[in-house]
Image (cartoon, rainbow, N blue to C red; front, side, top):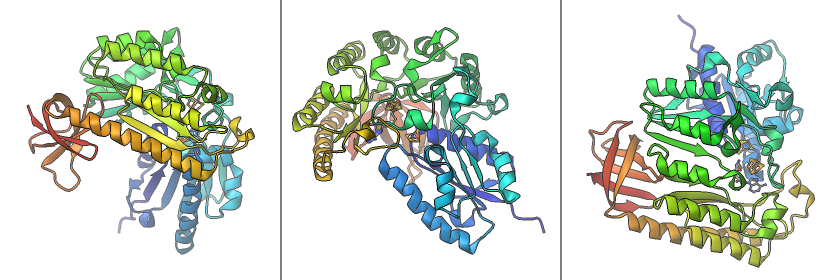
Length: 444
Ligand code: SAH
Ligand code: SF4
Ligand code: F3S
């Protein structure tokens, strides 16, 4: 009888960088002879790729570990690992608090997974959290060359990391502490990975980083990189995230307007509409500068879709500060707003300020903000009816394979009833209606 193939299960929290890292880890595990499973109770290795950006996701990690402890009791050979930003932040503490955990490693160490597993099998409990700053140059090829071939392609979309870490130290944010200083990836490596992905069928590429528009490597800026990527043969769509408003330049808006491949979509985190709060947050721009850049972009690209991140209840936020944020939502009319209640994070500057806005007030502000955004979005969705949108097909409806899913250039989800469409098709769709946040349409 052949022995059963060992299985792994990965649970991912957090941002697209973490999604990307989980993808890479699953490739590594497959390379080591493992098979993926959707069912933790069948897995021989369980990895939790964690996020510590807010208190909530971090709490979820610890409650999940509590459940896994019971699973491990019934299956002592199960290997449990904690990766990602909570791992980087808490290191040894996790081993101390949770006896079921065998390995803890930060985002810079996942390429060493085979070696880590080997050590665990020999009975060691492993912690790897040395800082990125010791490991990398400012420009580095932080993805080993032999992994370029296995780029992160899902369906027709490729996700390509162009930089990692962050130097901005926004007062509320843990990311510079968990991901370390900014390291930009060699431009030639980035371009090679994208071209390989396109050869394998990718139609859309996402350039990923904590602050992509501060990219600078070998004299190449983000503008230069985007310019080159947008001209790669066979690539239909380019998106990128996240951008920082202080580093957003009108020349980037010009490039977006000139290049049909660069999607008319931009995520530009605002955090607050009040200059006093922006200053306390160390965002290093004013609301006037932000709005000026948005107005310029809207002038160049009339159908641009914008999204943003907002924190409510930052220390000392008054009703007036909060209302200033609501006014920006009314002016900009984002298509999507990711809004969060402030929570203090370890080692950050804001954690030294009193967290003085009561939970009840934070919750009430969050609800008001969500309500306003729902109203704005409802009006926007309505205005799509009757228009023709270019849609990239990226999957099928979960329960009815005759319905295909896709995204407009502005990143709105669309359902189309046409069984003949395939993933990767770029089609013109007449919008006939909507359901919740989904547009519905027919082929033009
Ligand atoms: N690099 C990205 C941010 C990643 S964190 C950027 O600059 O856009 C994603 C979002 O989480 C942030 O934009 C912010 O809105 C939110 N966030 C970060 N720290 C937070 C905290 N301590 N409390 C509440 N929300 C927070
Ligand atoms: Fe955090 Fe600010 Fe860096 Fe974004 S730019 S990752 S919010 S420190
Ligand atoms: Fe979370 Fe780390 Fe990303 S803290 S948002 S997983 S960089």
